[in-house]
Image (tube, rainbow, N blue to C red; front, side, top):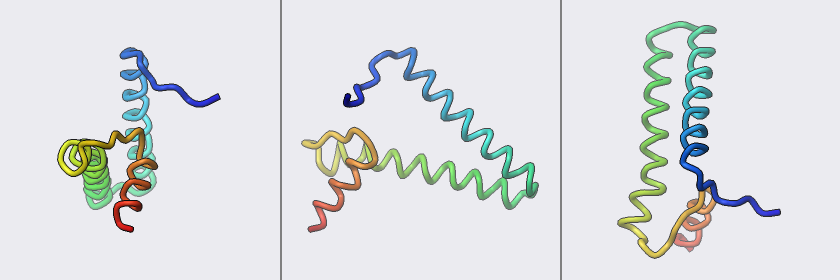
Length: 86
């Protein structure tokens, strides 16, 4: 059975909150094991740069680079990117 799109706003918010909780717990574990300002700064940079890359993969490409294609996930983005290179 193929996976269906998530359409419920309540479940979308729940999913977003769970992602934030996972990120927070991962950052906590890293800083708990090795507390330093360098590690905290690196974690912040990782979070920021990943969110910007995700924004680029979906919003920028979809609205400015190729408005005809709609991505349903990062795998679709990588497939589109690979086909575009060849």
